[in-house]
Image 1 (cartoon, rainbow, N blue to C red):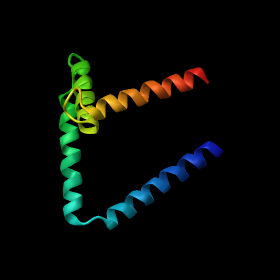
Image 2: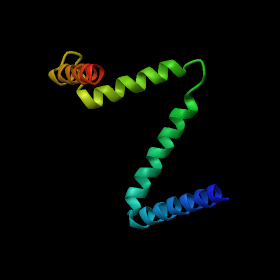
Image 3: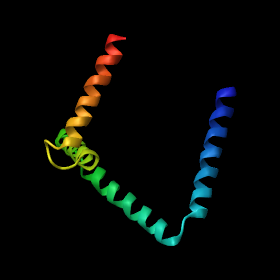
Length: 94
């Protein structure tokens, strides 16, 4: 029964947090969030099992372009790759 009480408490806290955020948002912010959610819904609705890997790859490419720049051999991408390789090497050798 303790698990059920914890689960109910968690859901109530999340609901209260959501209600508080909703109260603090302006009408234009709510409209932007609604439009974003609609765009994501259409994007996920368009995804089928036959094109899932293509959509997943395109999502990763768009994400990496936003984080590291669109140029393939930019200094930001090279520094990020170097940092990842060094961190994996340090974790593996430790």
